[in-house]
View 1: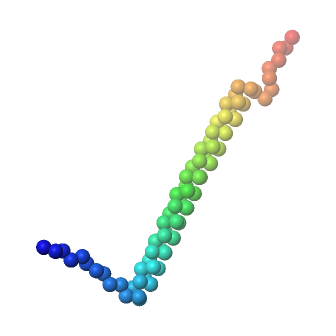
View 2: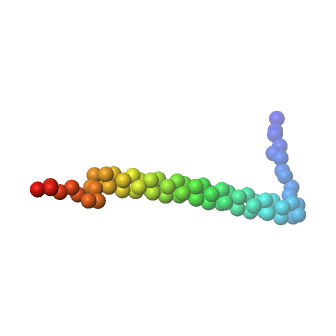
Length: 72
């Protein structure tokens, strides 16, 4: 038994449509990737800001602005 492989004939008009669809798909993928990168970048910057604020508060608690002196 021989199995014949299916041959698909694409006319020129259909070929143009296929190319446009592929281009749109790649643009959509690029936009999704940009959105993910933007999302992660914002998370990282928020994390860094939070760390800086926590560090600043810790330093301020350890080293008060006006050190206490002996009243002698």
